[in-house]
Amino acid sequence: MERRCTHCHSLCGPADLKCGSCGSGDIEGPPPVAPDLLPPAQGSAPRSVLDDPPPPLPVFPKVVAGLAVLPVAIAAGFAIFIFVCCGGVDWGSRKSESRSDDAPDEAPAVPVTDRSAAAALRVAADPDSPPFLTHDAQGYAGFEYGVMLAIAGELGRQLEVVATDYADLEAALRNGAADVAIGQLPPAERPGLRSSAPYLEFTLCLVTRPGSDIESSAQLSGRRVASFDDAVAWRTIRALTGNEPVVIEDRVYAALLAAGEIDAMVNDCPLARYDAKKDPRRLRVVSSGLAPSSYVVVSRADDAVLARSIDQVLTDLGERGLLQQLEKRWLE
Image (cartoon, rainbow, N blue to C red; front, side, top):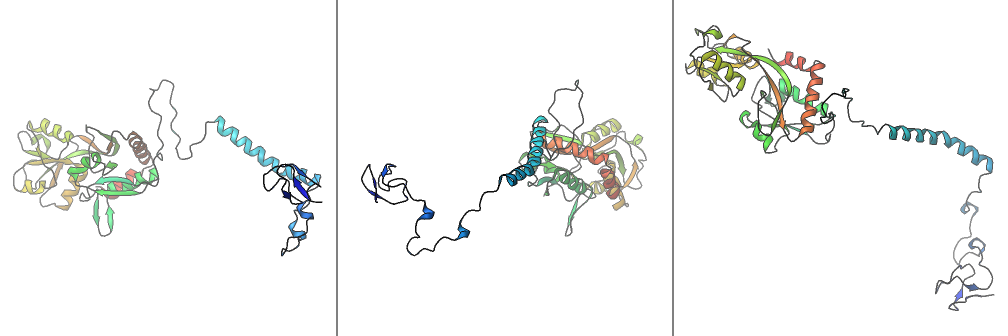
């Protein structure tokens, strides 16, 4: 018997649940035949036993399968409960020291891995400043290069040295060419910039030419004494000579001493000893311990996260003895 839609009177197939013309489900005639019971369409292969879905599991195997999954579900639920109760876990951070309730309400300690590991740490540095940094066909070397590598490694970042003249190190930070600057920079007030914890502490040395009548700092009164751009050295020279320092910008003081344009030089002891060893015919270290000083890493003041991370890294490197190993390897 044919089947016909009572809504639009169109003929319907024996297995149709709805009218193919109007979509109505009101179809008169015998109930629809299950597709598996219809004869195969013209040109199609008859159904195989492999086409049928597997028979349902009996009740007992279903129960066993559910019990097998139950421990996994319980463990997952317990892990989620612990995670929520503990406020989550920051796997990239380090444990910070506990603070007392009386501690000032400052920003929380910053983990050293807070910045993207994919971004290189751009360090502005003067490659012509041995023994702190040199560059040749073999690459970079020196005390401060070791410090840079250690900082970048602790931060989980690659190191990119931005070769910069000493006089332009601060400018490289301000114009965004570098993230930090390193290069025998003493702690000082620098507008818009921030000094890190020291990575090297030392004293100032007094340097003269061989044959000079100056044998100690007590003989500097009224003399012409030079220094680099260093506020600590300037204060020392003013106190010892009563005069203003002669400020020089590069390491040409051996020639100035030989020409008699200056009588002595107040220099950082690591640099003074290195220069005197390289040029003993023109330089002689006559005394040390004039004043304490140090070198720091300089960053932009608005990048507080990076600055605090570097402070933490330098503290860790000092406590682990790595800075002392680098000092022993490269400095007198």
